[in-house]
Each structure stands twice: as structure tokens, then as C-alpha cells.
Length: 274
Image (cartoon, rainbow, N blue to C red; front, side):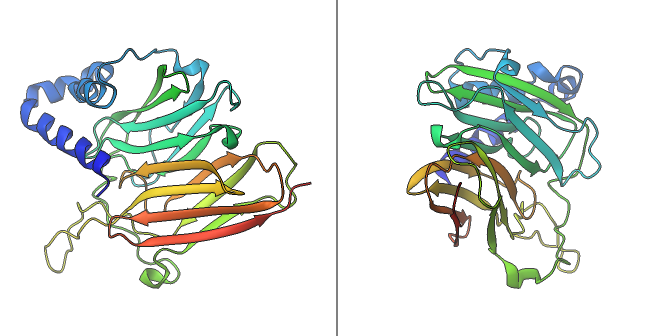
């Protein structure tokens, strides 16, 4: 398991023991100041100041009431372009009241062009979803949305898809043909994977299925890093990510995913910008 995410789980486990049920009930009436968020603020960011003006940097979009708690679409759109002088370095995607609140940390570079991320997450109960961004000068800012959904982390995986387990780890990159040179271009990364949470009971054996999820992503173009991410089972089954890169020359876009069973999946895509 990624050491960083393992540490976060230890923090959360300690909080669940320390916070009485009355306090957890109060959390629902005042989610922005929840004990869970306070613990995460201290553990992840050492209580460093976090500006509430994150909307000046990014826009976080999610449904107020999700149709499917296991597949909740999330969109993070940057309001500044990535440049060597100023860029968004990291995006922390946090779901306060999930069993593993830190769903992902995206590490961006100037080669991203835009620090936009679209993905799908699991939501276990009514909660705030937060995007905390860190710019290259170390400043932190946050924006958040409240999402009404429940049961997403304990919902059984859909194993009826084409290929079933035979398609485990099938990974694909997609972008437009002949993209414009030296401009941010969207790319989509799709991974066939159950991203199992370990919270689903097998109805036949009455045993919990072991966790098995994608935990690390690395994307580069022409040998330069574009985006990497530390992820957890808070990301939905069959992880799907949209982000940007700048094709500054003809080159190869590569992606590598590693899961919690130490399986590694690779793919590449030749890009010929015009």
C-alpha cells in the first residue's frame, strides 16, 4: 500500500475511535467544521493556512444529489493556465466522511497546460467533497461542495461488463487526432479495474472481498512528466480520468498504472500535433 495513503488511513482510524457519536451527528449539521476535516487539515497540511478563496483558482463541480453513489462525477477546472512561473502543483481530492477520505492527490506540472481533472468517485454518506490546491509557491486554497449520496463504498462491483476479470488492467489513452501544437489538449485515461474497496460482502461466502484498487498513476509526454496521482478506492470502479497536456512536438504519450496487488499496467499513444 502507498505509504502516504496508509498513513492517512491510520489517522482516520484514530479519529473514528476518538470522536463520539454525538460529535459525528453534529458534523452533519455543521459539515465545514467537522472533526474529520480538522484532523485531515492537521495531518495533511500541518494546520497551515488554507485560503477559502479557492474559487479564484479552481471550480469544483459535483451533483448536489447523486444518482449513483458509487459513480459520482467530479469536475475540477483551473482558472489559471499552467506556466513555469505560476502553476497548480497539487490537487487534493477529499471526501470528508468516506472510510478513506483522501480519494486522490494529483501532481501537476507546467506541461499539463491546464490543471483540470475530471473523474468519478464513491460517496459513502452525505458529505462535503473538497478540492485543496497547492500552487508552486506553496500557497494552499480550498473549495468545496456538499454531496448527498450514500452507500457508494460498500456497493458491489459491476462484474457484468465485457470481458469481466479477463480485462483486468486493460488501459487506454484517447485524445483528438492532429491536436494543435503548443496548446493544452484534453486526454482521457481509462483503466479496466474493479477498484474494490474491501467493504463488499460476498453474499455466498459471507466474507468480505479483499481490497484491490489502482493506487498510482504516471503520465508523461515525450519523456517529460505531465501528471501523476496517488489514488485510493474512493475513485470509482473502472477509473476514468480526463486531464490536459501540451504537445510541443511529435512524441509519445505514455501512462502507467500500479495497483494495490503490485500489478503494473502500461499503455502509450503516438501524438502528431499540427
